[in-house]
Length: 246
Picture 1 (spheres, rainbow, N blue to C red):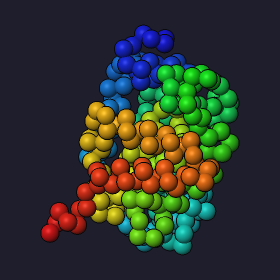
Picture 2: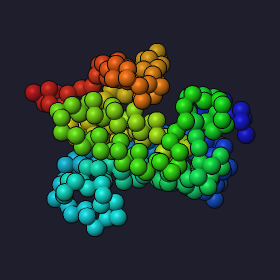
Picture 3: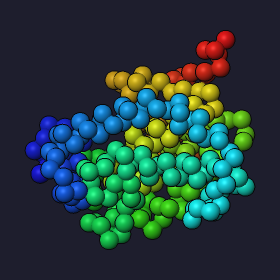
């Protein structure tokens, strides 16, 4: 299947559709376009999702993920569940593991790489995602970054996004889902990301290089320095919604 389609993303999706067949007859090209359409629909619903974050009255302790709840505050659980719901929505009837994290019983023992030309074959990518056994715990820790009340929502959101992409909980769609969660979180803090500008031309390459440098140094003493480079770049593309209302 490799190389059959002109777009690398479609070739990778074709491979996943073979490994995780949904039973629905859909070509990889059509599936890719459907994912794009669904993602655009999600982008148009960032505001109502962000408003849901602020609804703190619901009692969440009855849910099996109650360890994610801080008192009656729903943010950790909301984001954790939203991550899986977004993936389920994007890949419904395309992959039979839609909404599910990578598992050790999958092909390649559930391991995945990114940053290269082949997403799953060892040796041809820059980074490994977290092992399937560590995904849940690492993702919980990443989600809790979004609950910090330090007056630095852009910094908190970007740190979550960086961790989420590195964890790579799903085989595909991690970038889209990470951007959605970050957008919802920042919108709930009266800020909006100009993703279209970041993803345009050389700016995308600059963003990815700075992001990758943070991946490379995440356990090192100089991580803060490289994260600041990434943060300074990212802040250029943030709109303060409160200023627009004035």
